[in-house]
Image 1 (cartoon, rainbow, N blue to C red):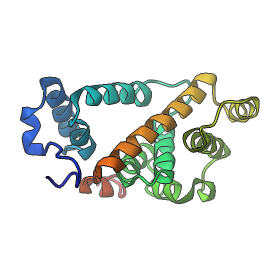
Image 2 (image 1 turned 90 degrees about the vertical axis):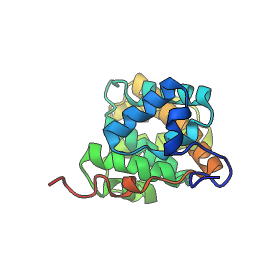
Image 3 (image 1 turned 135 degrees about the horizontal axis):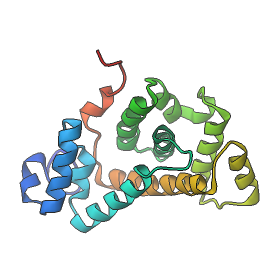
Length: 196
């Protein structure tokens, strides 16, 4: 066994060269951009077909341009949802991304503890309330939610994105917990201090 999982024999950095070429390419591309290989890439490489499907859907959700939903707002959804699902990996990793996108070193920690006591706008309160309703209560879009979300500026496509991101990261949270995948140490410090 390796340090990535107490339960599954996941690939190590040194075994990237043994993975299918397209997965090697994806891992090396993120390593070049980030300066390290996020452990979730190695965890998902345990099953190459699922790696491909996971990252195709991740990129379709997180990298597409939304009507009004910003990259920082998407990460807010991930952090709040992951915190409620007790997924340390996603809170730490996406907290780092949120700090960078929002240029706010405090926001991710505040949302992870309790978005309702965080100093965020009404728009963001409604967005996160809805994300948790969808992700944790198996909620449905009814007229009341639609009215609340439209009132703070979200389009129907944004509403889809909020629900899809919450649902998708529910899957991610549970796979990380299942495999016992720890966050990379590098994530803990990213975005906490302004670049010199």
